[in-house]
Length: 364
Image 1 (cartoon, rainbow, N blue to C red):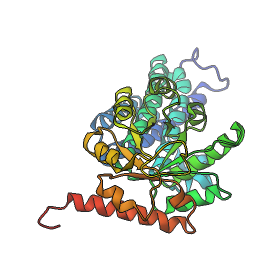
Image 2 (tube, rainbow, N blue to C red):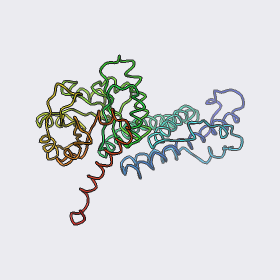
Image 3 (tube, rainbow, N blue to C red):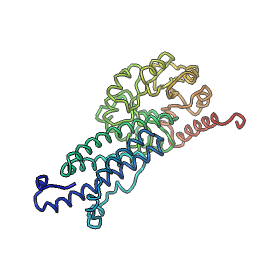
Image 4 (cartoon, one colour):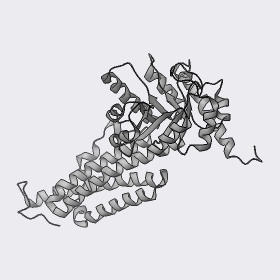
């Protein structure tokens, strides 16, 4: 590679400019490859995703072909002022999600630099880095979707919020107790306030590696960058919600009987709510469906499902005995004096039941 006098549009000494451009390319090739390697390791060891792992590895190898000895020869790390710069946000990570997000951003920014400065070296390099940048955008979306579905499969505890003077404080306490999914349900505030709260709740949930779902409102879920939306029977049809949200976000549907369950699954719901199991003031217009529907769901549901409606410490074991492995609660945690302890109780009971099911009968 070499910059000709015709290609050099920066003025001054061509050789001096060439050295600076090579250093820019070297730094950003390193940055992009390092970012991709961090993403690749999680695809390999965290997600056990062979296809994604190979895709990221291929991107790294493509970048390596542009990282020539000629570019490396201009590296001058001791004289680089950027090595002494830092930012407080770079000094800690609170979750794997933050690690991935930071390194996707790092990789995308580096590829954009490579795209522009690479054009001074080779039009092919600029075009190749542009295509890789788009591929990284697509990979980020698909990987986020895969992680959401993986966490949904693993989730057993689900909190639906209610109006509360200390909403954020209570939700964080529940998350500290191990709650895996939080649904923001709010019927009275205006949209601006709802969006602001939804964005704050999303950050809280992701800090604790929990899923964040918005009740009813597909537009609000999209605006808040939520992990998904939960739809009632009278809300937007699932197929339309999917068109808006795309393939990488979660869609749940409330169901009260076997027909609704089958319809929701056929329409593409990622999970369903089964209830209300018991009468609840949260849904005063819906009669309790009882434990029979819980047992039916245990035998027939082909997607994750959460028993919901009036579930408390007093009747949790009845619901689990009927076949539930996942439960959603509202008042039991939102109205608790100690939301963290209450959440820990639900999480521990669900985990205990799951452990008993996996033990050999001779051990039990």
